[in-house]
Length: 310
Image: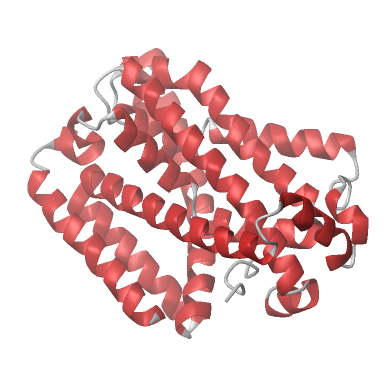
């Protein structure tokens, strides 16, 4: 079943790439989808970009192991989009460029500045991509039983095909499909977990007080982040870091104007916010019905907590 579902999704994305490639006829189409995406489309694609395998696995696992602090970690990701909405989206779109390096070069006419910006973009993308490949590889290994290296290679090859042949059109619609599938799957699993608690939030929170080794402390802050300065540093990194992610910033060039760019962020914020609320149910369900010992036996960081909810 898992193999059939995986192959079906891969086939769907390759079909999307094929039709997207036919629509890509010039540089603008390749880099910015011709600026023709609607607000809801771009917002959903941004959410798809952001709700990655690393995010899905990491947040749910963190909640399962450390409770409140795990969810608190996700708040920084969400708040980041307020910064993007009010400070980044509109001025970035008004520049009408293709990349972050183009944007900076437009404000500072110096080739060295462009070079530094390009190097910075590549560095961020490499580190970010490594995290995504690690998460996706681990997930495919668990679900399909493939070798880890093979799993990572499959994801890497598919990702390259989407971008090289389909450009921003393919990338956008693959991310939209991913967001829809991830939200639907997370909703179904969350609903099943909630049903275990008879659809009662009171019963769920009461049960969690005794379901983990942390006991009542599971619902309190301080299980992981014990130093206030450490917490502040983490959230500043999440909030400001998101506002500088190249693959997020580039998405504001795929819409026709600043108004649509702002609406994209609003759509993305709602989708991402709902997603992170649902990770509470995944984390609580894994903690209650899988157990911390079994979760850490598979992965010490808890990244396999959500997939273990079978």
